[in-house]
Image (cartoon, rainbow, N blue to C red; front, side):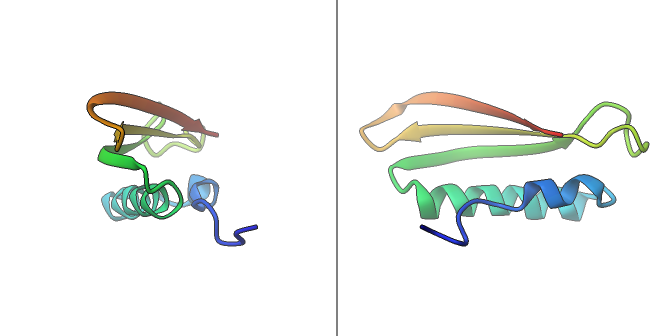
Length: 84
């Protein structure tokens, strides 16, 4: 087992959403994929806040990861994740 596996995206749901936080989350996702899935090539990561701006009802994050795989580097896939 890997006790440090993954990221802590859920903890960010109730934090004030700032550009700094979104950049930190983007870096966390990129690093986690590189460490735990080395055959995946991260091309781009986008982290955005859910609908409603900074209102109390907008406790969701949208993460979109553009990747390719070392076995087929020119075939790209998009992985979309919603965290609520």
